[in-house]
Amino acid sequence: MGFLDKLKEKFRKKEYHAVYLSGFKKTQETFGGKLDKLSYKYKGVNDEFLEELTIVLLESDVGIETADLICERLKTLAKDYPVISFDWAMNFVIETMGEIYNETENKEIVYNSNGTTVILIVGVNGSGKTTSIAKLIKYYKNQNKKVAVVAADTFRAGAIEQLDAWAKKLDVHCVKGKENSDPSSVLVDGCRYAKENDIDILLCDTAGRLQNKISLMNELAKMHKVIGREIENAPHNVWLVLDGTTGQNGLSQALIFDEATNLTGIILTKMDGTAKGGIVIAIKHKLKIPVYFIGLGEKMDDLKPFDLESYLYSISMGLKNAK
Image 1: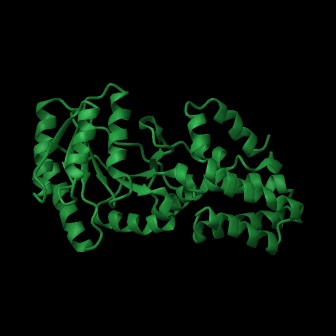
Image 2: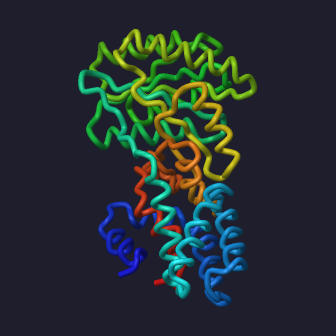
Image 3: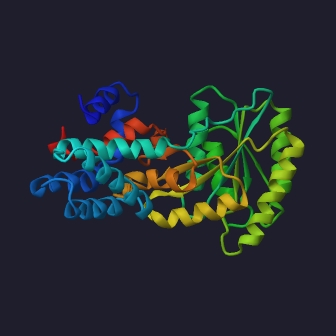
């Protein structure tokens, strides 16, 4: 049984399989479909095939470094096994993508066993940050967690009102300050509210300004300091919301935020609206940061925990000639 067949067997038993298939439909058609078309002119793992494979990988936003690594490993395999079928080659490519993702440790989300878990959410405006926080509220409430939010993005017009509106709709408390007030002071208020009201999960929205990296770093460093004074070891998680449709541009954003505040995880949004599903592998390979959640649609329940096996099977669905 090939790697893709094994994936299929596991995928059938997954809880979110239908959402993954629909969410990665565009990537299936481009990545899996274009790989499938290579079968009609496949004459072994030669330079021409590797060049075309690289192009398909780049078009799906795997990134040049990751694409070169996949092709190099396939080329090395071909030296030991001169006759490699297209089926075998494609199974090897998808399996290698999984291996690259898993080459660095997939750290679990940190939860505070002695009180409130503080999750700092960072990201540029337009990435889907506020909507993702709303979906996380729903996710944790579905687990019977007591949730509150902090509107610490005090610099963007309407950000406070937008998050407050979501909080009211989802029946959770929103700690907020005035526009242009010190975001760290709002976070202090949020932490104190969480302790006084036995909140399990405190989701903290922050400003996403990248124009001045020094200011961003100083602001986030201050946030860490004041939160840590209120709740031990807080923030326990720092998650970056990335718009999946931006592809490789999202990586440059991630590098800046990771330098400013040590990121612990990624939330990839709008994956249903892009054919660039390969960005998941590029992020892990280059940043060594795990993807924790993935946005596969506009509904409140369409933000799903990231599952590597479901992802790999979903993006390779267009590969009819390798199954």
